[in-house]
Image: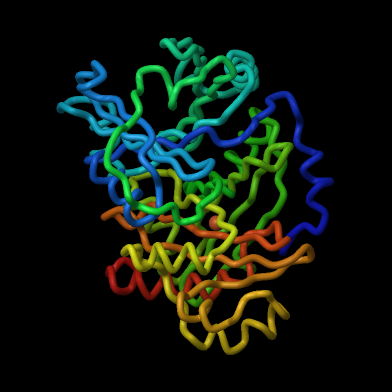
Length: 377
Ligand code: FE2
C-alpha cells in the first residue's frame, strides 16, 4: 500500500528534538585516487577547490582533497601506503561514501545521546585545534561501514577543519549551480530496512515521512522497498532501500553485490535551474540515465502544466513528477564509479516535497536496460 504523505510539516513534528542537526557538514569518500576524483568533481560537476591535507601538511599515510559548491562539501581520501583501514575499505567496496558528517552545536552531547540510545561508537569526542580555532568531532556507525560524524565548529574560522590547508590551485572551472544535499540514500540488505529506519528513529530522533513498497516500485523484473527518514527540521533526509523479490536481480541487489554490503546508493543535490545545471554537466562529460522519448509524450498529462518548456527537458532526459504540494524535476547520473554502485541525482523542487515516485517505473526500466548491458540483470 502506498502511504505517500500529504501533511509533512505535521510528520516532521513527530521527529524528536533530542539531537538537533543543523545540516550536512560534509561527505567523505574513500577513493583509490583522491587527486583524480577531485578533478572529476571539479571539471565535470562544478565543484571548486577548497582544502587539502597530505604530505605537505605533515600526514604520512593518507591524502585528502576537499571540494565545495555552495553548501556541499565533499572530501576525497586516499591512503599513501598499503595495509591501511582506508585501503581495506577501498579493496572491499571500491570507491564509496565512508562518512556523512552532520553539523551540530554540541558534538559531545550528540555522541553521548546516540550511544545511550544504542548507537555503536566510531570515534569518541575529540577536539582538534589550529590557529583558526577548534572543532570537536565524534562519530557513530550506521548501516554497513558507513559512519556519521558529528561536527561542532562554532569556534572555528579556518578553511575546513584543523589539519587542512587552503587548496591553492589554478581554477577556471565554473560553478554548475548545485546548492545543497537534498537527500542521501542507503541500500541495505533484504529484511534490514526496518531495522535501520528504527535506528534513525530511536537513536537520532528521526521520523518516517514516506514509504514505498513493491506495489509502488516494481517493473517486470525488479522491485524494491523504501522508507524516507527525516530529522525534525527536514534538513536531513535519509531514504533507506531494501530489495524486494523480482523475476531477476534488482538494482539494489546489484549494488549490494558489487559494493559487497550496504552503503550509500545515491546523493541527491539540489539546483535552482536544472536545465542549466544538467546542460553544463552533460557538456562536461557526466553520463545520465535516459528514459525513452515516449515518456515526454504523456508526462504533462500526468503532472499538469509546468513552468519549463518540455523540449529541453526531453533533450536532456530530465524527469518530472508532482505531489499535493507542487512538482519536481530530477535526473540521475549513471554510476560514477567503475563498480555499478554510487550515483548522483540532480533535483529541482518546485513545491513538491516527495521523491519522484511517478518516475520510478520509467527510471527502473532505464536502469534495467543498463543492467542488461552489464550482464547483471
Ligand atoms: Fe533520490
